[in-house]
Length: 281
Image (cartoon, rainbow, N blue to C red; front, side):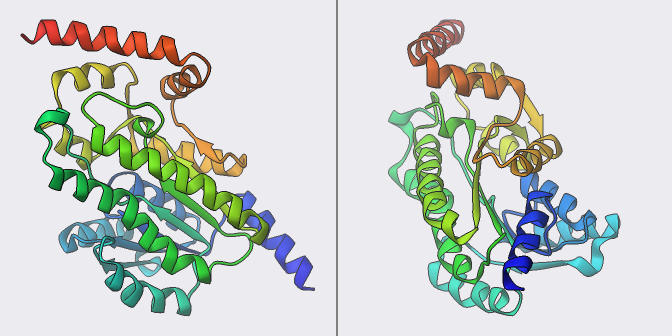
């Protein structure tokens, strides 16, 4: 009987149906778009964010889509390990999640020579350590058939001018996800890593304030996707059993070329940077 239940649970996950989700960074952007998909399928969703105002707004958005009774929020800073354990563990113990998405993140693009080391620490703490803190808390409660999605970036696959701190954190997140996949596969827990290109989110608006012109030029080569399109690509990739999910044709091509012809990718990127530098001097 237990084997049959486990098999049915696994089949449900393969079809992309879940019962209870935890999404960090769920108050906006890709996390909120994913929450909308889950809520519409009947899943209950816990949105986690450190911004109470954004959480309230996100809850209202999802409620307007008919998900009022299926949405709850938790104001929490994922970089605070003690607070994550204290606040999130009791929730998971009461209602174990079968979908966990680590979407909380930050960036502060700029020239390496002008980037303060405190900024580097903040980016690593949010993007990498924050994910670790959440995983250490929720994974013990997860059962066979559950799924984890860690949100990296195309800049976590291809080191990008102006993103020394951000790329470092997102490359590390890919490595964490790959190692965790290997450990959890035998427990029947699936791990995915999402690596989108620039996405039309509040974070993109924020980073555009400090983005060097060379970074803008490089970003333009991979295009900008909507959060909804990225979320749709994520669920599609999960249903197909993909570990690495790179949304968008342009992003997928960049990833493929980096793997097969890294020298070509470097030359093209260097050419774009050189041209942009000349145009802005």
